[in-house]
Length: 312
Image (cartoon, rainbow, N blue to C red; front, top):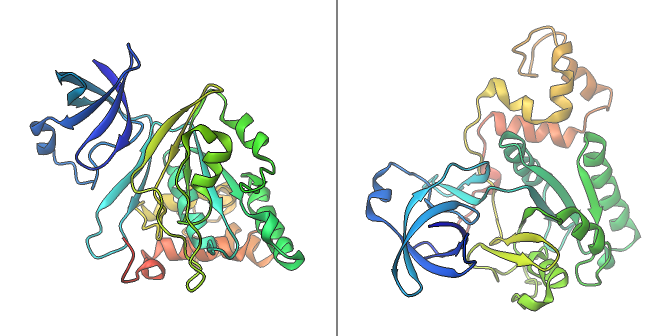
């Protein structure tokens, strides 16, 4: 039987049968664990699988079909294991908040690089715009313009008040979308506005640390009434990068990639090389310094910004 994974709890997987649209609780067939899969989750939400019925509504996953793409991150703790956030994605929404909780540009850029590497379109949603004072709103608009100038679709939204949610829904039609971001940025609130029938649990921000509390424990996909599917994911604290060849990294920064042919050396790393078009554009304020800082940090393999005792 052919099916799609709608929920993953680590040991059990909710699979929707392609033919009947019925849901089955499935385990992984033992030999699948012997194929050298090093991810913390060998099967991810969005995976297409083959499964066998064991009894009534239980099944056994026998095969994971090839993935079109996936969003993957490396754990920033000492284990350095990789975790697939979701697979077979048409569109990824990254929710960003200025200060409750803060979303750093280094986090945004790491997510974008990973999405670029796996060919996933990203829309940046700047949430909670109803809560900002004029100075904060100006900062959000400046940040959005930075990414809009690169070519990313940016939308200012208020999930709580429903502002610009219709624009988001229009982008979702006929697609499988994933919603990602830090805990507390409003992922579950956004889905509740888009599809209130699911009644997803939400929680208040910790006023002491301005950090969100985990309300989504496991990734889960939902069928929406207007012909779309959306994947809600647990909050991400740090986004450790899976290894990308140094010579290829700048290809996943679109504004760097556009300038690469104008560098003196075709293998330019945009560091100390002479006649580097990227460094010149940086000096001319045609490239954001925050983007170059992220590039250098990823190039050096520095995940220290994210390495805290409570991060995973």
